[in-house]
Image 1 (cartoon, rainbow, N blue to C red):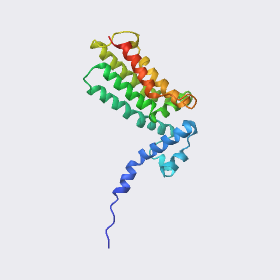
Image 2 (cartoon, rainbow, N blue to C red):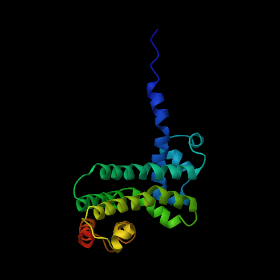
Image 3 (cartoon, rainbow, N blue to C red):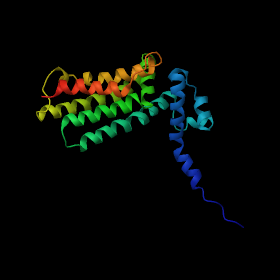
Image 4 (cartoon, one colour):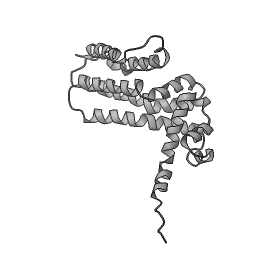
Amino acid sequence: MSEALPSVPRKRRKSARPGEIVEAAAQSFIEHGYAGTKLDDVARRAGIAKGTIYLYFAAKQDLFEAVIRDTLEPLISGVETMVDSYDGATDILLQMVITKAYENIVQSDARHVMRIIIGEGHKFPELRELYYETSIKHGVALISRVVQRGVDRGEFRPGPATQNPRLIMAPCIMAAIWSMTFDEFAPMDIDSFMAGHLDVMLNGLRA
């Protein structure tokens, strides 16, 4: 009599299931928006029964919150690690942070989460707040921290830009919105736009 095969693959799949559901939900949210996404579609994409979703997520809102966290928290954490570990000139550090912001916000799937929040956030304020707390608040705080580092080291001059870190992030947000909304009619060269952003920003900040 042959021995039964071990059940490790099944356990592995079960433990991975929440991530698979979130991944399937992210694709559905990107295609259909928040209001337009149906859990039946998420289940179909994940290859599970609809009822299985409720074993891990109480409602669609909880699933979208998981998409926000899974999409954005690793990006923010990566930039925080970069800032914590860098010991060189602040203008180079800020350039690295802004470059990473373009990669994370403009050129990754994270921009689609922003699109949903912009388009539907007024109907779902709790999701808008979560996006702010998870992404915008941390991003602005990181920029503020880097800029203040430059001021403290005498590399940046104090002024309106150093006091308003959102000014430094604004072109990146604009590029993300443009690429999702108007690129069909007037394509944006993201690399050229970012180079111009960095040039204006750094020349305005340097002491």
